[in-house]
Image (cartoon, rainbow, N blue to C red; front, side, top):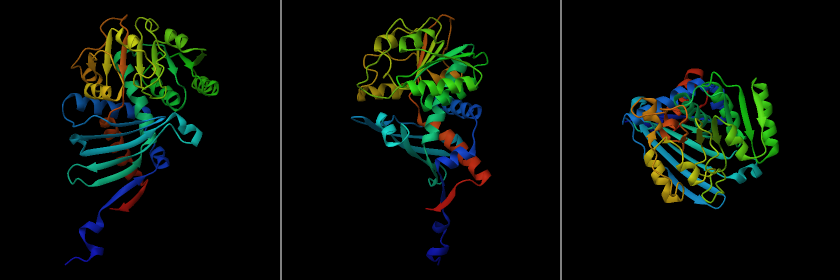
Length: 330
């Protein structure tokens, strides 16, 4: 008979990866775009399982749980996270949380890792993937909300926009805009700082909005601001865009149709039309993308769990190769 010390159960362990560990692993943005694309293509091909986000809204803070199974990489994940515009006052990033990664053969947890880096970087990688398939020849992008996501998007869009010359900068926080414009200059690009959201949207060929996600948001952007041929990528649900501005685009895309519908129950996307296409389906040529150079396109990228799955699996594989992280008993 096995004693507790030499039983099979006692040999089981999982790898813990802190944010520092994940950053040390050092996945580059081009690799992140690759794993995000693989995730969305797997979903579009019907080879994943992914329920809608579990969303809890409170004044000034939200919580969500995101889960999925990606059998092709033997991975299931659950991410539990919280976000609040008040986190800055607490010395915290806007998003905090953890990812739990399970092996689908055994069902056991293989890794527990910080989600903050994953969330910010795979979000930017999804925007880059959107630009790759819907407006790769754009010469500028406008960034509305220039904090963490501004810096992540700068790296991500440089990876997929070979003709990028200019970045239009707008933030209600002047210091954030100034810091981001310096990063743009350092990257060898021209920073154009503007005084209001309308000027940023009207100038941008690609327009990324990264404001706080709030159901009762002001929804600043109005119809007529987005120029012909432009691509808009809200990563803040509909918190920055009026419903009229969303409904006027020629092609409306999202990263998950079911999740888009589900979030209406929480007060988002009310009166918005149903999206025309799924981003993963465009990536694998199942559905149409841009058809005319003058089409105004919007891709509402909410962030989906299959992206966390492929990203977390790649991080864990690399961490094991490099000996990064701590093995802890289950």
